[in-house]
Length: 375
Image (cartoon, rainbow, N blue to C red; front, side, top):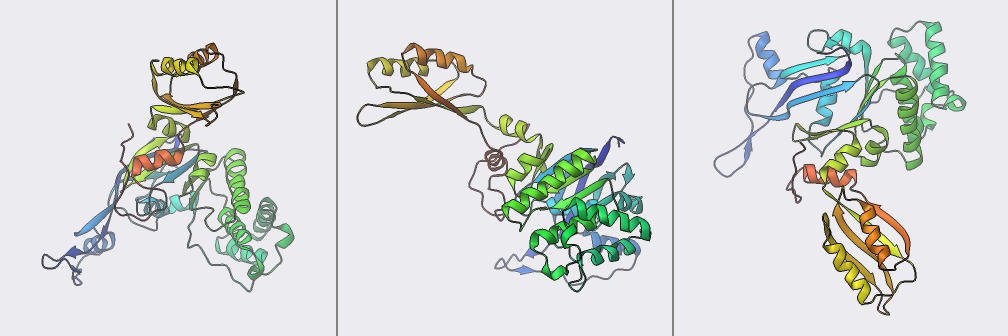
């Protein structure tokens, strides 16, 4: 374990008990309750280390730096939520090692809980009869904050989330976005250096989601230096916020890098669209297309020609490292006037589909895309 990392997992494994298929007819049946006569037996029953089982996490290795915004992507059932629940001590793991802020999760869970706070989709606990401020005061008392410290912290957080003007309104009058902000206030009451989010903007409208992302990224990570680990199905969100992302599929990490590196390493080609101004298609332009086809790193061209012979432009597939100036030289030499150029880069969704074989958020099942292994 290196102290430079906020979170590190080494060969992390988590198994869940499951049912077996009957050899006659394929129906499911479950084992009846077995007797537990020792502490080891109790732990085995809780952790599900005796078969039959499925592996939710299969040798997960992660190193998340301090002050980093790290995203975890994956299809439904890939193991994202299991990973987060293990880190915040809600779920026991079966093998491997986990360190949070330098503390061994298995040996020092109480120290881990002092430096980490999690926000899960099922997070609730606010009283509808209390105001937003009163709810925060209740949790400050529960967390053991002194009265003077709690008051100062609550005022700061209400201002931080722009809830000052609504702090004394009843919680039942809060919109979904305001409820999420109050949940963030509660999360930050203890001012822990590490924050875990599972689907941080789910259920928010686009404007509220953008504001929430801004608070997490610009204020908490960039200004306050906190470490955030977030799982999400929102690829735009991951692209915009995360310093690095890991794609987890069927319990294993299949890619881990910056969003841009994952996008660009996935594909060996790109598409360039070139639009022409006041151009006509003729034999000379046809020869130009032949010249392009003969170039190294050139995979194909699709001309856009109107029925009246107007030559609107071309769409070309080329190697991602091709020198664009060599293409433009051939085009200009043919007498064409270029109006605009547009390069179509692979998206993070393209990479996600290629790696996992399905679109983000789809339920697990038969996958219709070619799977690809990140190297």
